[in-house]
Image (cartoon, rainbow, N blue to C red):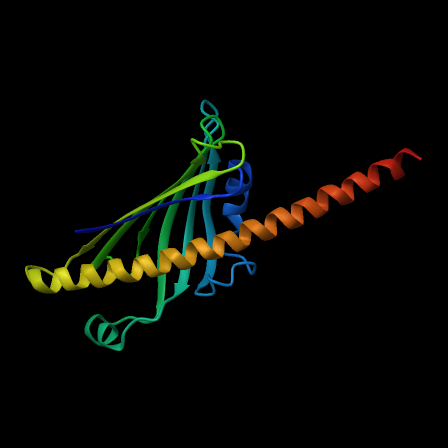
Length: 193
């Protein structure tokens, strides 16, 4: 098993980040064009904790090396199962995802947590990402190591693009919601007349 870890801070409040998270794979994100579908399987709120639990199926078009397709079959379409937990009380968003496609060959278990920054909790949000990548190629240690190493490198490249794309979504969300608030302010005096 190989591990990928990353963390950073977004210059946006937790409220902004937790709201924009649902738009992560929208047209505003030019870095996520490989995501071709996001289907919500279930969504519920725990009445005792207020935690929103959501299950989603994310469908992607990935560029898979031809030798991998030849060896294992399949195509460029892959599926990821994601479960997220949004806790308004603790101000955390936790997302756990795993690959469904080729899970008999490679297991990827990713956890992402968004929480208010410890240094500037009103205006910044911490992002922590952790992925465990395990090749399941039987007893061939050298092959397993190579597959895991290559997968970690690719995961890191995709994680960088993901952060850049989410940054664009955050920027656009702030602008659009700001414009909407201004529009609403302008309408209020007109309604009073």
